[in-house]
Amino acid sequence: MATAELLEKFRENLTPEELRIADMRRDGLKWDAVAEHFREAPEAIRKRFSRAIDRVAAEFGLARAAEE
Image 1 (cartoon, rainbow, N blue to C red):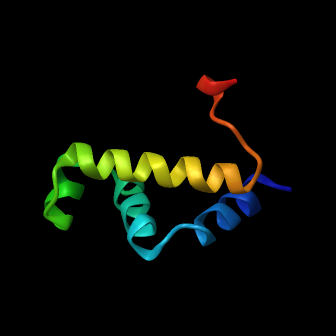
Image 2 (image 1 turned 60 degrees about the vertical axis):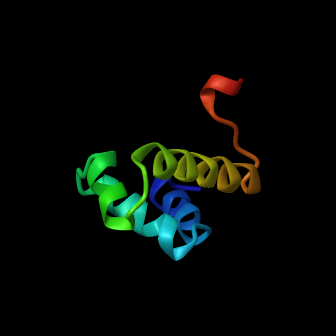
């Protein structure tokens, strides 16, 4: 599977909110700015997104490099 295809499949498995966070980060927004948009603490947003990445990676049978 090509990288672009894998990324698209990965994005399809994010919730709309998680996808919005991903897009905001891709656009260069810092966690503080993303958190302000959602009216939550930056650490809460960062952790929620981290868990989303872990969840989708597990669905694909992938593991983060730090866990290997």
